[in-house]
Each structure stands twice: as structure tokens, then as C-alpha cells.
Image 1 (cartoon, rainbow, N blue to C red):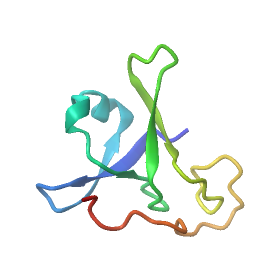
Image 2: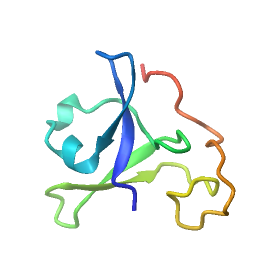
Image 3: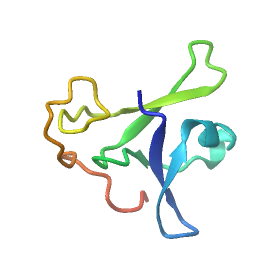
Image 4: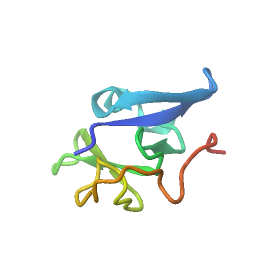
Length: 89
């Protein structure tokens, strides 16, 4: 289960690592447009606890078997076929 990801910081003009717990303290309207996996740079979605109250973890939007953060990892690390490299617009 992925509990960290990267978000683009307009202030720093770079990608910064953020945990689910840290992002949970930020009001939803201030969340960045795109979040990515810190390992393969694939886009990730936010998943909440079953009761919907708190942020729980991140999951790849499009599965990449070349990422060790994915269930079913094939053992060979490689970048996501559709990496989120540039700042979201």
C-alpha cells in the first residue's frame, strides 16, 4: 500500500514528496491537480478510509507492473509508460 507520493509545488517549481497523513491536513480545494508515484512517476489517485473521513493511501491510476509499489510487480523496475513528468496545468 502506497502511503507516499509526489505533488508538484508551484512555490518550489519541483516535485516534492508528501505522505497521505500530510495531504490529509490540507483542505481538498488546495490539493494539486496531479499526484504521482515517487518511484515510476505514474499518476496516482487518492483513496480514503472506508468511512470516507480520512485519506488512507494512494493507488496508481493506470497500473504499471514495473513499479514495486504495485501488487503484481514483475521484479523489473521501470518508468511508467505514461509518466507525469511536467507540472500539471
